[in-house]
Length: 243
Image (cartoon, rainbow, N blue to C red; front, top):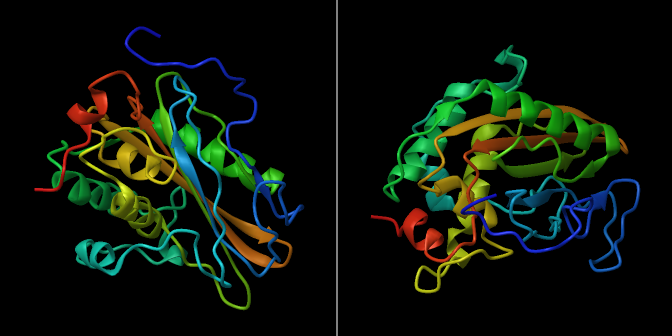
């Protein structure tokens, strides 16, 4: 725990509020029908206790956080295999996931990430648990790891969301980050983990299935070492403005 900030708080409920397809309303969020699909859960480093609430997209097939057009275009040159052509156990184009991360990280002076099997295995278990419980929530975060989660649901059409969609959606939180006041924010935790300079490894996994008649995708990314550490000066050192 040395060098990492931790505030006393129970860690059994890591996302507040948790969103479930079984319960379409939460006490602290708007009621949503099952046609309101999409969820994004803030990056969590379990050695900190700052968490984000899940935000749901207002329209069918719309993720909670869209990639801004300029960010989608920034990684448009990176080819990503069609979901039906992905045959690895993590159900993502691993090279495309890495290239998307590293292209965006490079703009902030952060070194490239390497694919890590330990992180990928944790991400696989995390995404599967979310699907099994029909609820997006942080889980299976190994020691020293951080985690980003993404979820979308689509009706009447195949859900083709993959790693690039999740990565660019996380990155687009940059629009809400104030580099003049660096630190963790409930609307920017995915972005800051993604570009965190001290993070060197990532593993991702996608799990796809049916929930309430909707084609549902959960995507998890686990990072090592985890970012979003709130000790003084660490956000300034690890989250740099784009060059």
